[in-house]
Length: 126
Image (cartoon, rainbow, N blue to C red; front, side, top):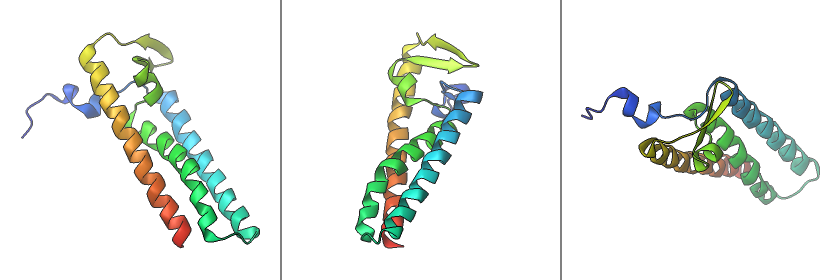
């Protein structure tokens, strides 16, 4: 069993909160709606179901929005070693926190890619 304090766990490391999380969640929903419109257009024009593979891009962007909101971590801010908490942008000085955020950002990208692949496959085969 891991005896690390909760405050040091990767789940507690974040670089956004409140309004920034809401923005990413809304962006995810908007891109998912765009994807639905694209599916409708592909069907409307009678294109092959394989055209739906182009949805991997929008699905990835939607996944990024959802996962960043859920994880309270902005991958761009993590790369810049910054945080935006309560509307205030700050430089992060703690090396351990920076490394934890960068690891978390990498996992967010992987999760978003998995979401995109799964949704694309569902879109193609259903």
